[in-house]
Amino acid sequence: MHRRRLIAAALAASLGIGVPATAAERCATPKEEAALRTRAVQTDLMMAALSCGERERYNSFVAMFRQSLGREGGNFKSYFQSRYGARATTQLNSYVTQLANLASQRYSREPGEFCAVTKNQLSELLTLKTAEFAAFIARQPIEPLPNVTFCTAQSAKP
Image 1 (cartoon, one colour):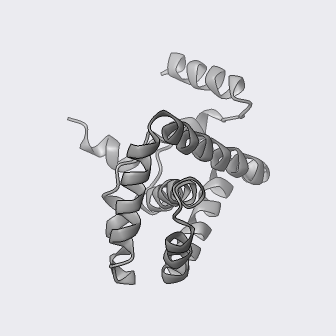
Image 2 (cartoon, rainbow, N blue to C red):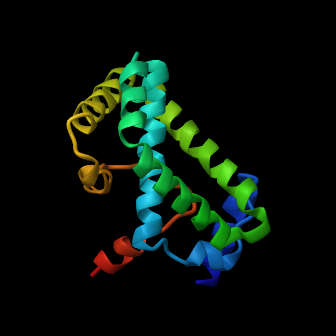
Image 3 (cartoon, one colour):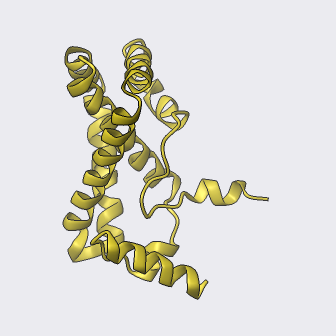
């Protein structure tokens, strides 16, 4: 456990991120997970808007799910506030930048695949009712998020 904490701190330091031991060890609750997943999916869709010619459909998605995105955005901010206190804004901005960098890297490696996946996501989203948004987000595959462990993933381990 101590070794893991040292490795996490070293990684965080190399990325320019301060992660207190308690933040690195505490898993994200289901509510926090939903907010983090929403931000990750939305980041990919923003990349699709900019790089895959999907601005119009991305804007339709944002308008259609404005309430859900706003709620999850508030939960996203709360996650960072509860973990980092006075450093919440800095950590949140760093995290958002990391998500954008990951999306950009995935696009750069395989633009056709990235665009196909995000176009399919947008197509599905634009057919959903607002009540179906949370279930859609929960089933989307996302890349492991920097410095985050989901409690649901821990409970699924044997």
